[in-house]
Length: 165
Image 1 (cartoon, one colour):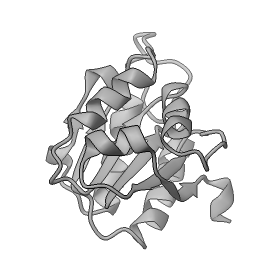
Image 2: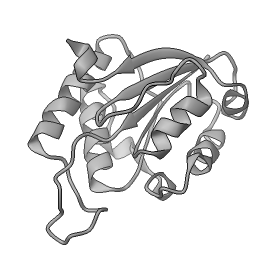
Image 3: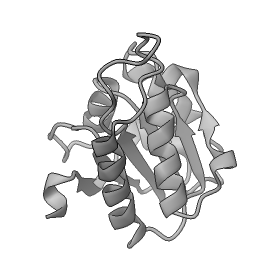
């Protein structure tokens, strides 16, 4: 069984020092939200096999917070430039379809609107929005990632700061 966690980056500062979108890092409130969500997720998630992240500062910082809470080595986070592009779901689907089938639990860190659309595409049960720091977990009853993205999966979890209580 495959498990996919789609994580939207946490709250970023409004403007980067160089005025670029790519270099917008996390705001203090975003760091706190990411830590709270990651800590909650870590209570029930014992192992992550692979973390892929957009290279944008806010996504990578979010991935690093989750990696720390989940005892995943930060050096093992693989940057995927296509996860930064806002070209649509096809970029993310292509990345997932090429993940080695030995990977059982995969985490993706990136951006909306792509991640919200990806979640809707892969899980008919999920029709919520994805605010910053949100996590959509989906399980797939298959042995390959290529089949997982074609068949779709079942909602495993939906976490936001609001529904943590």
